[in-house]
Image 1 (cartoon, rainbow, N blue to C red):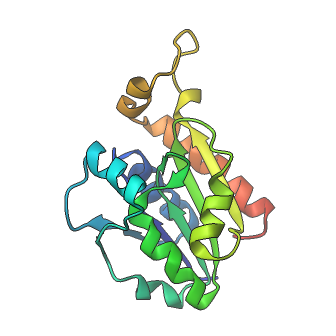
Image 2 (image 1 turned 45 degrees about the vertical axis):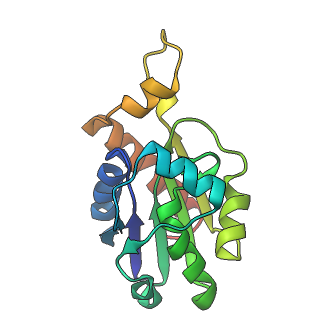
Length: 172
């Protein structure tokens, strides 16, 4: 099975996870880049106005893969907005896809949001929470979550967990 990992990262955490995950799965990894720099203000504006930011590379490149694994943060219960164009492209080819994220907290509406954008259900949705990595004696805050940088041990643990879930679902 030919697998592609498409990743977007605002803080670098999802990118570190995606690079290591691609190595583990022997998959091609492509980073999604925005044409303009992103700020918290543009994230909020994209959410309010339902905008899709301009990105590279061309989403047509996904058509030759059997499985596409998207890796990105979750913002306000939605996959990071730079992924929207790529998720919409899935509807043309009906490829299997999974969504894997390192995010702050649980997002119960994420599978529904993915289905709404892509037009069909993801084969797997895996969320791994930064709040679970913070010291147990501290209460997670938006600031502590957004400032957290994954360690190599964090990445290895997350790769093992995500690999196990995808194997259980017979995707890899």
